[in-house]
Amino acid sequence: MRPHAFAAQMHMYIRVLEKVASRYAPSRALSFDVVHVFAALQLIKNGGRTSRDALSSGLALGEGTIKTLVKHLKMHGLVQTTNGGTRMTAKGKGICEGLLAAMPAETSLPRCSVALGRFNYAVLVREFGFAVRSGIEQRDAAIKMGATGATTLLFRDEKFVMPASSQDSLRR
Picture 1 (cartoon, rainbow, N blue to C red):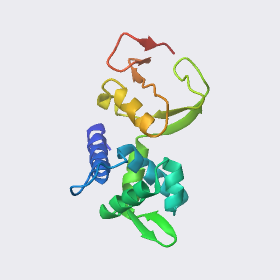
Picture 2: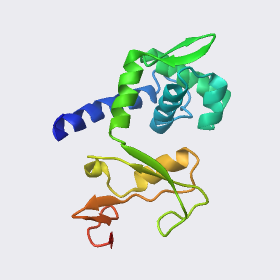
Picture 3: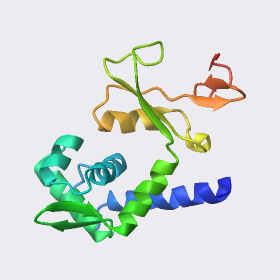
């Protein structure tokens, strides 16, 4: 797939996640966000079939919030529920696998100059450097998922750089 077509496909997948994380009628503000929707799809994908209790503990969200999240996922045709748990539909699998295709590697990291936390995790995302502005958006998403912070680095001109800066680089 060409880079432009790949980016367009990713944008479409992200729009679906944003719709799932949106209120569909006048109601209270939702307690989950796009990152929770994607993480829920990952948990369901990894387990094949997942209970609401497993989603609640895996996402660190309350029972009522999980019930609403699953309802929204069902409304958009991404999951089906039975007494045996929640499982993904073909549409949900396609979106989850499409998003994961942009993330070819994930790993735990030891504490270092760019990963200061007790537990550190790195995700490589390809072809989306253009979407990173300051890195604050990525930090905010990480915090919503329970992190204490996040460091975003871009790989440009054969070196790692901080977002919004071509001066601050980390040499290989």
